[in-house]
Length: 104
Image (tube, rainbow, N blue to C red; front, side, top):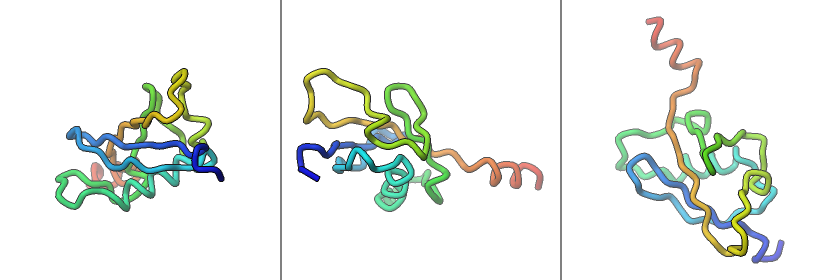
């Protein structure tokens, strides 16, 4: 894939710090992004995801679905082909784990 076709993304954490930027193919899925975020998560953060299911990615005010590709989630920004797109990361425990903990 030509270098210019890659989409540059960075991920903004709850405290305003960033992970990235990294370059992704437009065919990469949101699930792949989440796995990368978990792998790159800073060790000094108090709140940390245990896995990709604990992360919600938000772009342009929409929560992104795991099966969507980066190309499908990308919002057109006019004539800014080389701009870095910032996605917001929300750490939220999975529903099954939350139900188990609340019933204890």
